[in-house]
Amino acid sequence: MPPVELIRPEALTNSAQYAYAAVAPPGARVIALAGACPLDAAGVIVLGSLETQTRAAFKNMVTALEGAGADMTDILSTRLLVASARQEDLHAAWSTFRAAMGSHDAPSTLLGVTVLGYPGQLVEIEALAAILPS
Image 1 (cartoon, helix red, strand yellow):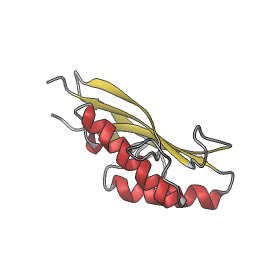
Image 2 (tube, rainbow, N blue to C red):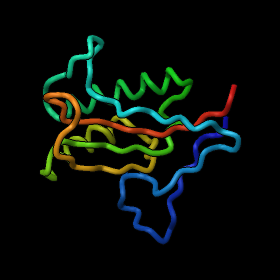
Image 3 (cartoon, one colour):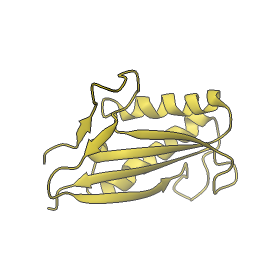
Image 4 (cartoon, one colour):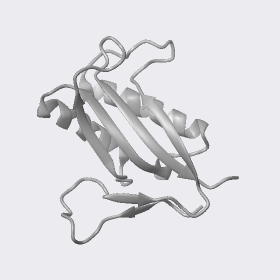
């Protein structure tokens, strides 16, 4: 399968830690993932730091991707939601997320939000991916 094409226009700064756009391969099916929460197998929030919750949510996102027949390199875009108004907290979650994404720097949005759905939840990750039909 041709990989997702990540777009980095020369007219935009190269200091961003992500591509500015992504193009799905011709004929690809788009996969919309529900927000990946830091839930364990029993459905309980993994308590701990922003970094701990980000890693747990990321693991769940990867599991959902695999369930749809995709992997991280198929990601078109992500949105990282952090329950905090502090930029330091957003940076902590972002740094953990970016490290987990590795070289696939898909277009991403980082948002501070007031609250997320589960008690104690600090992080949620949304993603779009694209794969060719089998």
